Image (tube, rainbow over all chains, first blue to last red; front, side, top):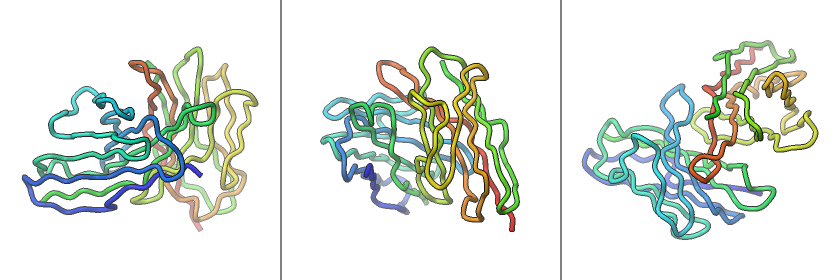
Length: 118
Length: 115
């Protein structure tokens, strides 16, 4: 149980284009989803938190207009990197958290998406 | 705000030897602690968690951790490691920030199991 998928697993795009990454909770309802960014050999950096049906909350220093997050349903959140530039190249990982005693704190992570901007 | 310290950035250990990966957190009233493993180019997989109850927590793949409130530690242990345990290990604490619980991660420990 508690499986989270991400699509695509890797994507290469040209500078200036937009890229959408999907995060799905497959066997539970995710009341909250998180988007992280991970640089090589480093820990995860939280970018934003989204609750179903609400606007995402972005961490300090993360550009809202560049990283658009939509959490339209209890099983799907999307991250769109708009007007991507080479410095946006990174490994993006989502996580999902359900509600209730078992899921109140635990985040389940997707497999990640490797974005390369040329 | 909470902080999580993983003092060892790399831990080399021979196959079938025991290993301990250290994690310390800053003091707080309520503590919710987690260990995750990350294999190359993959997401994080939950190894174990402490939310309440018994301070000795058993997880998957033969790992266990002990919550020690007086020492503010949550060290991860395995009595006998395998080559397949080679990976990055992250300790995390769940903390309420701006009305929602978020993770604070440690910097990670790279476990390298040698044949």
